[in-house]
Image (tube, rainbow, N blue to C red; front, side, top):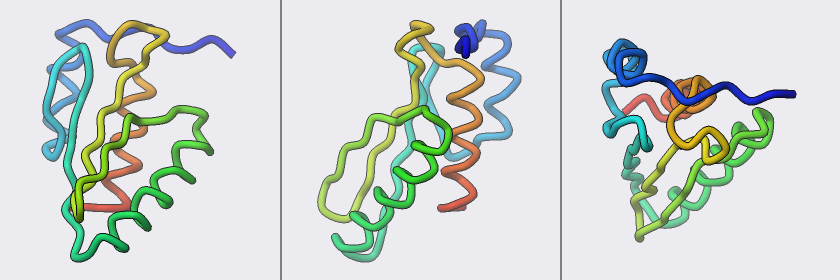
Length: 97
């Protein structure tokens, strides 16, 4: 199945108002999720992992104590694609902020 292409700067600018918890540009979008405990942060990664696996699209994840730092980017497209926006929305549904 072909992957979607990298979004143009204008396409990304139009999409970002729907993703207020995310920041970045065409090279990647980032978000941090702070949880009450380290165990909660690990559990959050597992939840995100199941969503990502179901989409066959995986974020870069960095765990620092109780905070999960996420980056979504389509490496095959060389930047942010529609898949990244979809994954960001799915993550926001898990952790609305």
